[in-house]
Amino acid sequence: MSDYRQIYLDNAATTRVSPEVFEAMKPFFAEEYGNSSTLYRQGREAAKAVATAREQVAGLINANVPEIYFTSGGTESDNWAVKGLVCGERCGAGRKHVITSAIEHHAVLETVRFMERHMGCVATVLPVDEYGLVDPQTLRDSLRDDTALVSIMAANNEVGTVEPIRELAEIAHDRGALFHTDAVQAAGKIPLDVRELGVDLLSLSGHKFHAPKGIGALYVRKGVRLGSFMHGGMQENNRRAGTLNNHGIVGLGKAAELAKKSLGAETGRQRALVEDLWKKLSAAIPEIRRNGHPEKRVPNILSVCLEGVEGEAILLRLDMYGIMVSSGSACTTGSLDPSHVLLALGLPAEKAHGSVRFSLGQESAQEDIDKVAEVLPKVVSVLREMSPTWNG
Image (tube, rainbow, N blue to C red; front, side, top):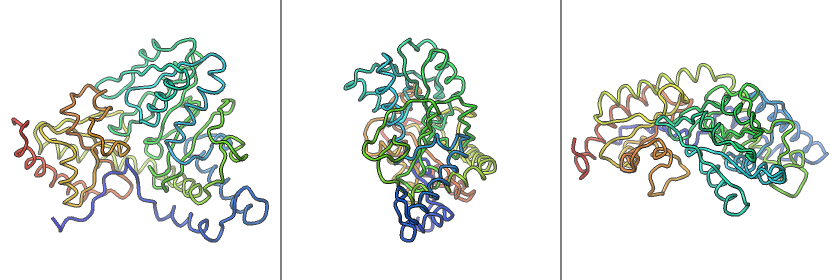
């Protein structure tokens, strides 16, 4: 086993900071360390760098520059979008109804549940089909006169399914509701144009596309009155208080610029690798199921369920070979419960427990795919021989 090199296929959990991003960030740790809110040279230079990064992030999603607000990551962006809108102006106007889906990230689901318990809001959680798609007609039937916000993710973090965001946003707007999308797994993976999508708010997180952890952004369409989430100073147009994370912001901007440049070619390359992996695994392993939509999906995620084995056992065995993957969302690691996403797709709990997610990044190569295709069938075979539930 020691002959196997390290193979990292968990980029949906986090990515390595790219060398170009790291180089762009370095001066802002020790040389250009000024507070971007100050007026002397160090502060002005930092403010220029922040302004450039805001332009770069806006360019990735075709937003206007003033519509970009920097946050600490996807979780804060989601919390701010949902709480800041629903429990601010819209609740004051009598709109206390929120609609989301059963496969959202916990950053949205738990926020909605908190608002139900403590803030007088009412939520409708939409089901999805066997591929993880939200039915537009189901959304249309669920909208009410007091619906404040619809929050549906652009791409699912576990199975990769891409939702029909443009159509869903149009339906929401027809009833006077605003639309938020968690695009954390979509940004840098597929083209995103907030104008074409018609969304009012969009969340993204830098560490999902080779920027550092601890930095993200929230797009807020001009004219949307979003309440402040962080209170204190006047930063971010008096909407999000706190000294700016200059080096993180610079890294996010550079990563957004690089992602936009490489999007087309990298999308095709990763999609081809994922399809090759699926072809090889499905040919070598009996009773293997692919999760999510086979076509409407981000290019870098392959989620599978394997009968008769536990996903966690597969992860530990693969780790012995230097292969790093996931059994679902990194945010739920340590939970004994099966994936809420797979349950929402209609899988029974015993099958959902046998899930493995492979997620590629810009450093993933054909040799990585070949190694996994060689090792995983052997691992599954050994585990099935030990399993009391396997009857194959």
